Length: 97
Image (cartoon, rainbow, N blue to C red; front, side, top):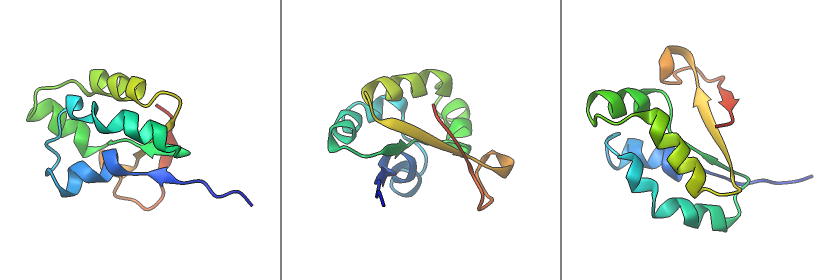
């Protein structure tokens, strides 16, 4: 049996600590560290994070995610997308970004 670890810092951290107001550039420092840590996957923000980036931060999530992806190097990413765009359901589709 193989055990893999998934980091959720970039996904859950903004929701609890910063109230979804994390700008794309704020991942510049932690992302390379997460890449070196050896996680199987790093979960990245989705759903309401897109709305906040567009509406309140005036940032384009379609530019933010390639930036984060480059910083994560070889580490695979996951993005949960569920009903309502906010992932409200328990079953989530894991999309590779």
